[in-house]
Length: 206
Image 1: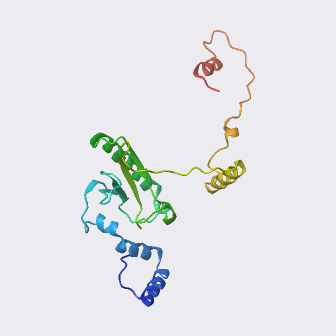
Image 2: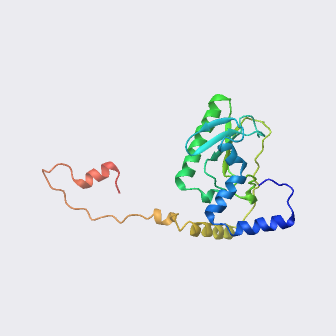
Image 3: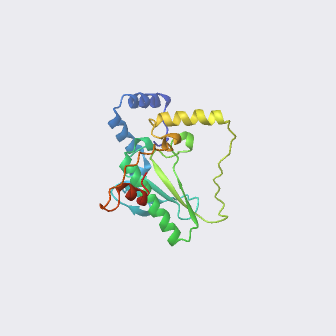
């Protein structure tokens, strides 16, 4: 939303109005305030790189490197958890194609594909997008992640919380590594060709 001359009373009234909105009304309100929705609607000029029924990719006007692309969903979503699975899959398939095009067309030596998901993660736009940034050696763009020491007990604790939040979707390694109990071999029948047990052994079946 544009930061114009707005009094504290007007701001408070607006905040109260937003609180009373249904999810559909709030989404429509956000769309009207979103500059990227205006770009998608063609009301704001941009250099389009790719477009289909679900996504739009444009050049960033303040790029980290020449060719820096903003890839956004056409439907207004603020953060990744709001996006349907099939749409988020589509976003990253498009990001893959954009990355490959950079490697072929502008002599990029690599790419960064970055999503800032939430304010604490550095998200500044209120519209979900992925940044696809072409990279070359010594281009001056540095993404340096700090490496913090952690005790094994803390690693285990955090890992268990993440697994629980996923609904226990990750199987334990020891469960995967269970050794099958060997079956009692049955005597082979003469004159009937190769035994089924022999076929299993040839195919590597366990």
